[in-house]
Image (cartoon, rainbow, N blue to C red; front, side, top):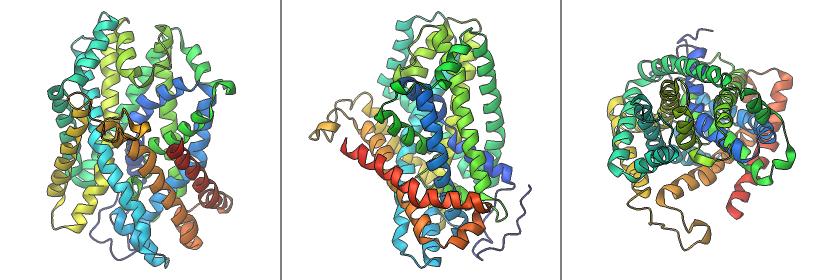
Length: 465
Ligand code: PHE
């Protein structure tokens, strides 16, 4: 599987490094896709949407929409061999299409920048909880104390700022060291550690006596509990969890060797990401059920209910701490991938070197993050779009989250699917994806018809309803 540097492709690649192996690429892409979405969001949206039937729809969305777009994005990156915007322009040029298609990458990169600003804040919450777990703050499991811990954190700008700064520094540290010394090295350590921690957490969950209940909750579909809204949430989550629509996979693909099959690699990543989400469910729900907690508790599920449970369990402080370390690792490798495309772009477009580009983008993003921090406390009454009914109560942080997730990502993904499906020569796709005939035709039909229609439906629904 080892991937040589014998890249001769486009002539513009000489100065660029490549991932040292296919495995390194798979780990990096998995590192990006496995994040807060798998461990924090998937369990709670599954809980809110009734369990098994939602999981089934989500799996279908990953297969039919997620993996095909993932392939399209990696294709653009590897074919263009530059930062996402330039890559998209070059691929368009080679296929005699309009350079305006690069707008898809521009939207994606802008979204990545904005998302990182608040993703870092949430990564900071996880880091703060490692501290709480390690100092025994979960012990005793008094609901008031645990809820107080969360609301005190959100109410304190200085505490949030501290953890946000620390988290962003970790991200900048890795990205500034470049592809091999930074990105690749971090994922080869963090991803295996993450898998071990996750298996430990699942192992621990089997001892709670409620493992079977969690299995049936996740895998026994009851379609009466699934609403149309649940279907749309599953589709949106498939996007988010695979890190699509943010130009990330284009950036990562730009360092991928020619002889790797994009098709097979994307399928492996899709399966791994999904497995991690399901394992996270198997780690969390037994604990939830064993303590009579509510599976549909919403976003507070892992920050409010789980510490409560950990506080009442034997070895709870230890496992609680390990659980939040797991969460920090997952968020860290995702955050790295959010910074990379923008840094790649600054590095190519200016005379700045890697370190300077990373620090520049990191500092700007950190500064934007302060807006989200203040939205939780000092500016919690500031609702800039209150004149529109649906945004009435949304703070600046809520708005950033809403517009990136519901407008920018699907729009970028939709444009990418349309571009690759309809404006790129079929032969060049076939050559790069390296899928056999039947699998290629399946993918080609999905990306041309099914994916754009499905994404357009979600997009419009989100805007209108
Ligand atoms: N895919 C990540 C997750 O599941 C989220 C993410 C979104 C990461 C965007 C990077 C970019 O948490």
